[in-house]
Length: 231
Image (cartoon, rainbow, N blue to C red; front, side):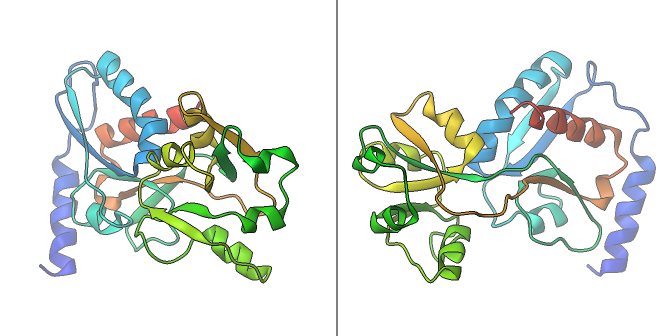
């Protein structure tokens, strides 16, 4: 299908979309694409809000599909939550919050005996969460700028599995701060400051132009933005 035909179809859908959304009496389904770590931070509260404010709305969390941009473009999900470097035309983005990284180690780890230095940081083996399970990460790029490398002994695409592996080993793990503090309440880990400066990053919600003015979609986006302010 050509881009011009696709746009005409999108415009037609926008014309026939309802002009108002009444969550209490609405029925239907929202599909959200996101990784496990952002789902842990945001989705429990969203499920709670749907149950009380829009009990007739169902929620689907789609399977991972890379950065999910193509999934949104093809209409496979209503919106995506994640970190995005750049977006194609006809996409919208709204930042959720500023985030940074911290170090996570098991309780009783020998590295806790002294303040964490960059030398100690690179001398221990690491566990790295890399969505594609290959390549490097922002941490590796920051180390390379300092002429340093680390040994990544374990790679995983799963943020929520990683802290449990760290709790049973001497591996070092870097996690987003909010996620680390959320998990620390249920896993035997300690949180340390990263021993080097790194720029913060900003998770966002993204959506396609075809749904920008849809009142149900706007309501969903606003719920997620409100939840992001309290995580």
